Length: 288
Image (cartoon, rainbow, N blue to C red; front, side):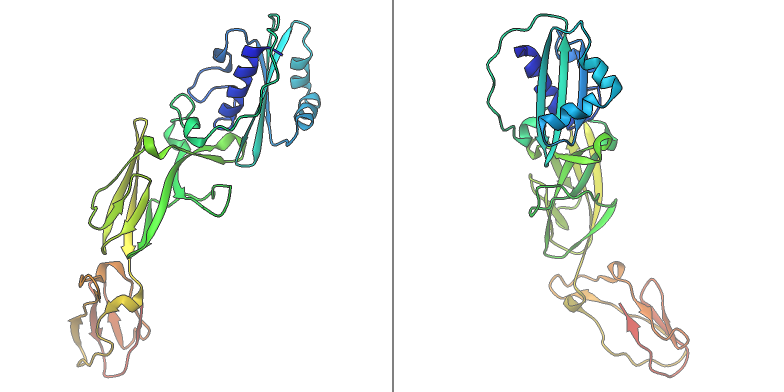
């Protein structure tokens, strides 16, 4: 075991948690991590060193790499991310420098968000809710347009998705992300990515990270019980009238943010401007 190769293998194991490939997250080849390095094996998913070794041994290409007579030293690294283990072997034709067995070390997510670690290709970044009750990140992406109830909060984050190893996510460091809202009076956003619906309407939330920008439109909505409007209306046949619904607290008209349709369209209809048209004198009901 070689000291420099051990450090290289540990760093490569962390890098494969971001981009499972012999290519480093910054686009360089794996051999750029240390000039001594001449070969590399990677694997993931095994929970023990024996399991990782068996996986390599049962793979002809990896086994051949392990048993080359030219190798004189090795470094082995293991990194655990979101309950998944990543394993790396690196090999060299140079003699090993003696090393004492190192202790296990906890590396915080913020450290893993260093520029040289993060795959900054835009396709790998998604905005999604964080499940505080789980050690795993929920593999769901917020749609381009999503909804937030008036008065409520939602915590969102940028993550790096390792698509080559089953879509495992790595939370990026919020301190390096600049969040902003196009209409902060409608939806506010804090430095940690927490959104809050302050009024009825829409706002574009933007996250900037390492020169990349991601935007999501957030539309706020209200519970139907928080709206005011006519519960019953009497109209003459062949007449038309616009109906207005407002939010009780903000007093703002919310016609553009709710969907309303007639349960008896042969009697009366409602158009996009919330104008009701009655064809004959009968009771008609509408639903939201």
